[in-house]
Length: 327
Image (cartoon, rainbow, N blue to C red; front, side, top):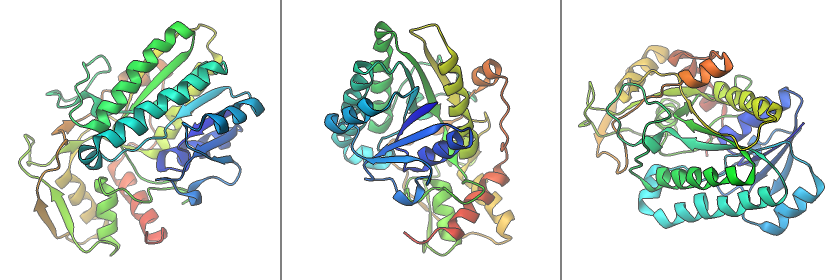
């Protein structure tokens, strides 16, 4: 079986590639390395340095390969940056994705997994968000993802099967230290680990006036290895599917929310030391609470996560940070 992963030099993409290689798939990665790292690309994967909108390069790749499935992760993902540069995000995440997906359709690639985000729901006053909740994105990053989702709905007419995976907060690292998060200023756990390991001089909490138990934002954290497994499960499902024109959406999370201060407290227990932090201004585009209801995925695939533990998530992230060289 052959899988094509766009954005495979990134954090989630490289972990997903490792999972498919473990399952004996032939893995090809496309990445322009604008935010990805060549160091994260698995050695056994075939790598093409290219933008997903480079029609000549992508067409040549399709001419040489018959891919069973495409997993599209390539995107800019920083909420704060998207607020500052919305056009950049709409162009990269939406316009380029359209070009890429049209090439897939032209080459009769009819099984697609799209990497979306739980932030498409916006501010939802519920403990657990279901997939049928109306999308209400409050930042350009999330809106760009909704636009791609809407575009892919039209692919039903082209007899293409699509699964949307809406990630909540992805964290942790590969336990064999083959992949982890290299850099992302918007990632809370990354920032804490950098502070604990001396890579950052101060720890800033972005706002404490949200409508939550302690005033800080609440998020649902899923271990990246479990998320990679979810991609593999969905890929198997699509590859075996004979029916055409499927469009399904799945939340990817654990259904438990932790505040920023919860995370800091748990890290303090691990390192057995207090963390000094400062309260800074809230970031524009941040929602107060974002917690998944992932029952749909669990029931459909009879799946239980292996690493549903905040302690495991944080320990693996901290070990990776100590191992990973300073950016």
